[in-house]
Image (cartoon, rainbow, N blue to C red):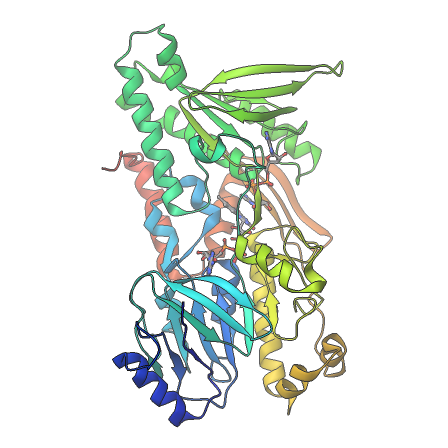
Length: 503
Ligand code: FAD
Ligand code: NAI
């Protein structure tokens, strides 16, 4: 594939000519016009941000875009407030309430911000380019940028001075056969819709079968694998839907629906202290969730899975569990874009969980790539809280270095970038842990609220559920989204949940 590459620091005339050539398709050796992106203001360094999640959008919100040409590249044209995603499959919160268009954030910026609705398919750290594949016609956000629209599936290269990689991670199946084909993940909005449709379809099909039929029992068994917060919250929300809403629509069937939550470790939610995990397990069992700890799923077929339970006497028992719907929530692994980058940078060859970053979040072995959020390995948990704090910190670093004379030039040629940051007074990133919260179902939650090592609150129950709600509202990045979530919660208090199968 021939690709035109336009440097944002090229002479404006040359760039303009290239733009024209691309637009008209007049290149002598390209059949299809190549893709061009060129900001008019070529004095400023170009920062390419990959992603539109917690890391990327928090960075976009805080970066001084009058000092940089900002290009945001993400196939997902909205920010997703993931903490409330487990509430979506059953309609406690509407999917659209936790989606905020990238454009809403970008429009608030002054300076040059361009958004490409595209996937980054390759990063070349030597040439400082990102190859992108367009998902649709490109949105131009900044009136000050020259932007030749890309058609869907077109490929282009973007030249950057700095790259901020925040592409997150993807669900990990640990290579267990059958998971990809038969399981549902819960990472993105389409996953939520898939779980809803599969669940409602299974209940409808079961309803046509006579009571006592093993196929009816299978269809009404919903298995959630992974007792981390995603698995626990999803199981809790599904049980709420069964107990609070399905009961009125289909009273003849609800008592037969069984949720099984499977966790390989001896406890669920192992990031919380024992007092809270014990409470969580008690609530889950009281709400009729069949909790199986010390049980690892090793194989998945279309209608059943095989799990192995470690018994107290050390023996292992193998069980065949038929299921109607399978939700797979066993954590994440790096995306192929990132694992490919591991191979291109010698200092990253040993990386496996994410790009290894230094204390300024610069990717080891590079002078121009920063990584934040789940695609970075900074010895911190892969949470929104970490991604958000890293992004805020990095935006401050970018502001600071923009004021230091010749810093950009010096960084380009420096063999000891860490020392250069230090000499110029750039402080290392320090994470402040603000605690953890998890919803359990039946309007009960657990929370451990801290500021660094100081603990302010640790508890579980209905009061904590309201604390959970208030804190999650405060974490939402836009007023519009916050308003919609409050409206959703108010609506279900009066009218119950909307959880319709979508056609
Ligand atoms: P993400 O937010 O996942 O964003 C990645 C972005 O990169 C997305 O926009 C994606 O479309 C884009 N992208 C992917 N591939 C490419 C590519 N090739 N090119 C360009 N862009 C790409 N954390 C908490 O702290 N508290 C919580 O309550 C909480 N709840 C959660 C609930 C669920 C259901 C899930 C799944 C996670 C939850 N997390 C929570 C974890 C939190 O969501 C992640 O740690 C956080 O999203 C990481 O931010 P990120 O920017 O690294 O990645
Ligand atoms: P996780 O990695 O936290 O938990 C996955 C669980 O699956 C682990 O407990 C693991 O032991 C178990 N597991 C793995 N393989 C298994 C198998 N084959 N059989 C049975 N069990 C198996 O993943 P999760 O929950 O998706 O969370 C990912 C990240 O997002 C975490 O950092 C988490 O803290 C964060 N998050 C935070 C939330 C919150 O604060 N409320 C909500 C959701 C996610």
